[in-house]
Length: 182
Image (cartoon, rainbow, N blue to C red; front, side, top):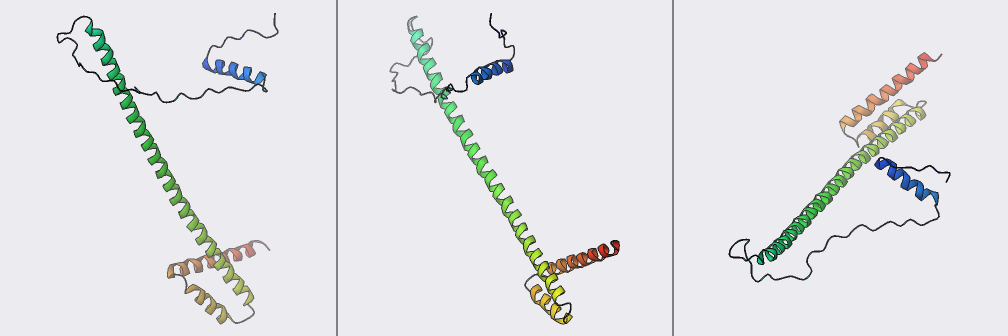
């Protein structure tokens, strides 16, 4: 008797577990992965059916088998043509969907990139404003206001308003922090 118990797989998961355990028992042994089956080839040599006949129109009993064979070949040929057309349609649909997803991702990335760059420029501008205000605090206030106006002339009125409200919020926050901490 062997030490191992006889294991009978009851579910597909058990069967897969058994296969994996067998593979992991000897990790040095190479695993053979079978190739995926290629597309079925149709009839390579075209066959010409010279006497096309119906199933009952004056056919003898021996001709029925010939008719049935030709009918089966024609049905398989039609089926293969339909399958090939369906695969081409699915491939085209898949590639179109992939292209569409790439386009959406590029648009989203460009939008986020523009937003990041805009925010970065705004932060630089605010930092420069704060730096000029602290260095010019001892100097005249007119110079700092003229510098901020010259910088602001590059931007639209809306951006000027946003930066002025944000800088005033920052000042209010600093005032609040100073009031809270003694």
